[in-house]
Amino acid sequence: MPPILEIADLKKLARRRVPKMFFDYADSGSWTESTYRANEEDFAGIKLRQRVLVDMTDRSLASTMVGEPVAMPVALAPTGLTGMQHADGEILAARAAEKFGVPFTLSTMSICSIEDVAAATGKPFWFQLYVMRDKDFVANLIDRAKAAGCSALVLTLDLQILGQRHKDLRNGLSAPPRFTPKHIWQMATRPRWCLGMLGTQRRTFGNIVGHAKGVADLSSLSSWTAEQFDPRLSWEDIEWIRQRWGGKLILKGILDREDAEMAARTGADAIVVSNHGGRQLDGADSSIARLGEIADAVGDRIEIQFDGGIRSGQDVLKALCLGARGTYIGRPFLYGLGAMGEAGVTMALEIIRKELDITMALCGKRDIKLAGKDWLARPLA
Image 1: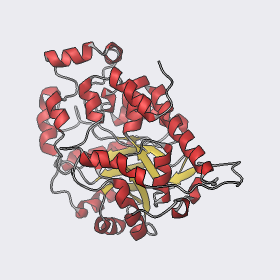
Image 2: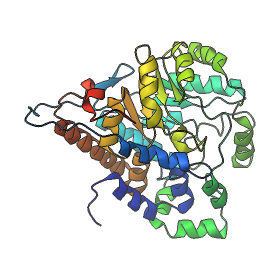
Image 3: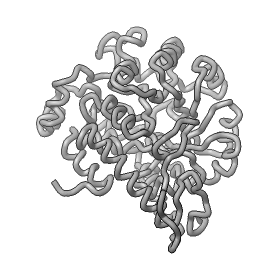
């Protein structure tokens, strides 16, 4: 196997080891995927300021996100079906994040349940909440996250209805996969993945089956999920969720300055500038294109976090320079997980850490907490 030096190397290996339907689920956007591509490509237009003949010793990437100490300002983003990239994927990713010293965020649409991850880890993780029509189920999810000791709730705002993702429809995506000839062939050509799945009982949505009303098995799950995302979700819902939760609250999915102004008035602890990885509104701006304006507008009132398109430590640094306090990586850790399990997640974090550290040094800086626009070569056009 050639050496793994960058996130792209993990992506290539994951493509060979994960069945196509699940790799495509992680590696796709909605409709034409223009926003998905822009999330990555727009980082290239941001240039860093090179400095020389400065003391580069004693560098520190340590910081905080919503008051929690982190080894570097990077969290693992909430991603659905993580346990379909690799058997027990959420547990493995959470363990890697815990050992590394960064937050792990469990998705509502995870394969391993809240309780599964809590039983397998020793440090509080974060939980991402989707708001469903069944408010009793939502309240129960919040209570389960509290009981598991989750230290922050990440409320996703931009999935009231699903953007169409052509690859998922063409692949007939499901969890667990359907046993059609096409799906059987996909799995048969990925023996490592199949062996892992044979060794676990976690193959469907662990937070839903057995917890939601009327969803006791797989036959009733698909119709429930198709009907349950709540298009009526509004700013008024944030207050009852905040009161029910009672802990640190992060609002994910802000891409507009006016929405950021409204979010800053909710009492939440942080907002995540994000377009859902380009998986919702195709044709929207990239997350990085909107970050600076939003940070300038509300960064003195609420913590700014960032999600979307990060594939390197350089990308992390650019987001921090534009006003983010912390960042999220989704696809990079999924590539690592699909490629090598827990070790691959750790490798993805190590790649990001090394690139972030060396890039900071070559900018002539030593403390990541001081990152700002003065670290950039010129303003964005």
